[in-house]
Image 1 (cartoon, helix red, strand yellow):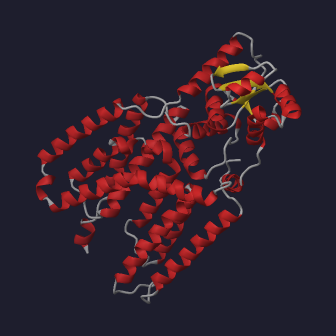
Image 2: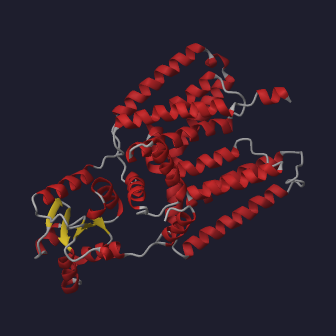
Length: 428
């Protein structure tokens, strides 16, 4: 019994490695600069709004935001630094748990270096910017997978706990990810000959899988029925998970192949290999750092142009801008609440941000407008609504109808559901 315990990878050592890699990736992110991904500003705007106003701007699954808020409060980091450290910590935890799920026996030195190498690959290190909620969900699922037996009552509590944590991380990813988890363990349990408290008969695992698969199909049908994520809900869910899975595949494959080689080729565990891998980590980090990633130059131009318009008094300091989506979150994070508001809360002198304008639309505009760039303008709300009243059917102005519908739309069922979840966690 003592020998069996001594062969199991130490969780304390693994935790130290998680912290070490988190700090290393955080330093990388810090030197790289601000997030180059539009969706990042949803989290940043939420963090700023909740910290300064006590309310969220966008309702998402609460757990990723709670982790972000935790690091911001505990370490007293700026909004951007707290966000970058959250990304680094989630990525580090995920990579360690993937290897831990593959190899539960004691790791050798090069197992740690394998994780560090994979972390700094170009196809790995920027993924949390795009899939933070999905990564966090899978982190809890892999934590659940590590040493999963379901032989004792405490295993049942562990199952319930991590199931809820993954659910609160990303509902859509949870449904698909949990299906893989149940299917994998169903196959494993059906091949085992021994019985346990929860699996006294061999067909019990299969029944569990069929129950969850039925639940999965029912939830997909229900989401489709109520347009949970808007029109095309099912397509959105499958595409979102597929994009995440495709992005994740090279990471999982690299760790699996690396662990297989370290296990089968004993000479790869030598210190000489450690030195080579260390050099590869530095080279990979250097070239990854030099590579470009998604930028938000257009948003930065909006920001600077708005400040110039206010400075030159073309826009009154009390005038606010009505926007939505990524640009709204970016402007709020950069400039603050007075400049970005909901359409229903705006007065007639506030400005509507109209993106993707055409030359035909500009030629037919008879009201004053301010140009932010060649495709984006600002129109005062009173002029914007007058145009819709008088020229709603005019083909060149139909784009303005679409903009108004976007700005005045009701919350989606998914947003209302997430709002309830946020309320349960005291975030509203």
